[in-house]
Image 1 (cartoon, rainbow over the protein chains, first blue to last red):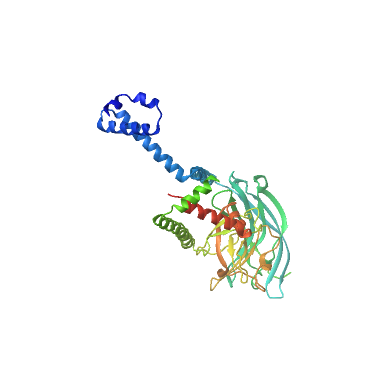
Image 2: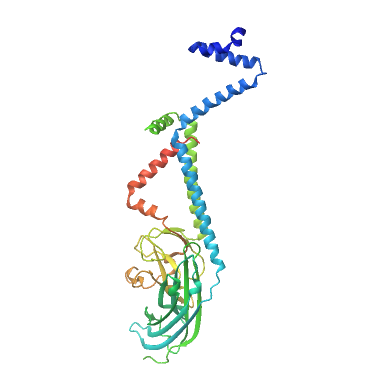
Length: 229
Length: 180
């Protein structure tokens, strides 16, 4: 035993199966017997670990490592996308809009009591507005509409949209339009004669990312005629 | 071919303890999804907090396949808001914008008329026969935010059910064969 241990070189030259395993066993034994040789020990340990790893890899298969990589990449990409969206929507807070609008009622085309018993009116307006300051690089569209708002003894609030538009570009956000009401202006009841009402320009901003927001300009002091015409 | 054989091997090598662990983790996934959905219902106050846009009637604001987040608060409904409503006799809810509001003086009830931004006329044709206004109870919530494209997954899955089964099968196999 001690003899063979002293001459390992000659043995490795002879690649016989059993002798080789014998040698390995002897090597291990020697390492246990002689702890002064840490190098050998380490080698054996690492061999063992390699074998274990190989076994594990074989068990799991390659599919998993691909799946894990793909998952990690996807998670990372989505995180970055979410972060960028958050920054973009936060950047909208830096913009302080200062829109302006003016609405003129040019003509009351007609004003009647309906057969069902509701007042209906048709009117022509001049609308001019400058909403350019609402637009930032994160704005998808601005929905703008003019609503007549008034209170009657029956209803605490009536909102009737008269005209609306979708603005998608900053260049189109400054406009002047001469129009009659796009939607029918019908009251619930017969309360419109001599009634005072507001015309309100509302806008709803839809962003590419982030919250939708809305605001309005109220213009008051409009009045219906005292008699049907 | 390699990994199929290995997958079969791994299925064969499953022990009862592993099987239990996998069943529990699968249950965890399902229940956590349910918990998130119910929690969203509580927070938003809407019976379906997330809806998918199915038509182009709100273009260019909302396109087919966008996901909308709904919120149902006590705030009164006002013109210009985008609401999701159910019409009697119609299964699928509709997402449109409010154009007329009449709020009653004594009871506070509201009559609401809606219209799709991309439609020519108002929604009276979509409402039930003879219905002129929407009331509060028709409205499921108002849209507060949206996520583009994500809803396509649902649209594709409802229109082509085969893809749904393939996807569920693949996911199930992945859960069974994974060891961690």
